[in-house]
Length: 287
Image 1 (cartoon, one colour):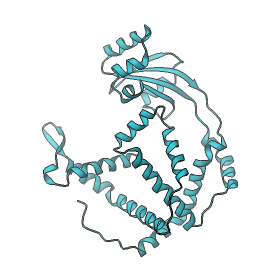
Image 2 (image 1 turned 90 degrees about the vertical axis):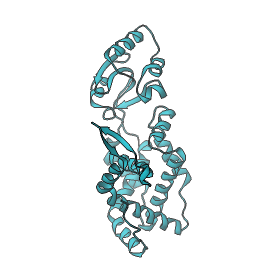
Image 3 (image 1 turned 180 degrees about the vertical axis):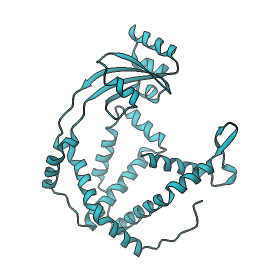
Image 4 (image 1 turned 180 degrees about the horizontal axis):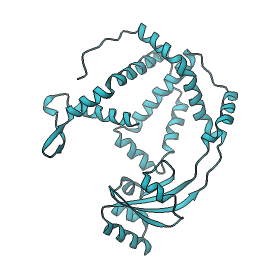
C-alpha cells in the first residue's frame, strides 16, 4: 500500500514536470527548495523499473484476454465494488478516500473490471478451477483467519490544543451533540464528513496511541488522547464481541486466495511466453 501511494503521488507529480517551467517547488526547508522533479526522480529510481515490469505484465494479460473477446463479469465487478464500499461506515468516507487517491467511482470500477477480466482469463489459460469442495475444505482449514475480531464503535474529534479539548469535553458533558461538535470543531476529515463517526473499528485499524485507549473504554465514555497532531477526543458508543467465521461471508475472499495460490506457480512461465511473443519497444528513459 505504501508503494502504491508513493507511485500514485509520482504519477500526479509527473504531470507537473512534463515541461521544465512547470517544475515547481513542493516544500522549502530552511530556505532550500525541494522540487517536483527531485521527488519524481527518486521515486523512479527506487520503484520505477519493478513497477514498469508489473504494468507491462498487466497490459499483456489484458491484451490477451481482449484478443479472445472476453469481457469482465459485471456481477462480479459490482460484488467487488460493494465489498470495498462496505468497509466504510458512511458513503461520504468512501467518496473522500477515492478523492484523496485522485480517482472517481467510475475509474475505480474500471480498475476492478480489469482485475476481474484478467482473473477470468488466467483461470482459463492456466486451466485453474475452484470447486465448492475446495472452498469448503479451505474454510475448515482457515476458519480462524476469517473470524470477525472484537470491535468498538468510535467517535473522534481532533483539536489543536488542550484548552480546545477541555472546552469540547465540557460541552459534551453538558449534553452537546457529538456529531455537530465534530463538524464544527474537528480538524480531521471524518469530523467534517461524518460527524467524527469511524463506525466499528478493530485492533490494527487505528494509530497505536488511540487504539490503546479506545479498547480500554466503556460505552459512552469520553477521553482525550494527546499526540503530535493535536488532541484526540474519543467516545466509544458501542462494543461488539468477536464473532465466528461464516462460510457464506468468507467464500468470495477464499476463492480469490485459492486462485492466487494456484496461479502463483504457473503464472511466471506464462508471462515469460507472452513477453517472448510480444513486441515491446523501449521508447527512451522515463527520466
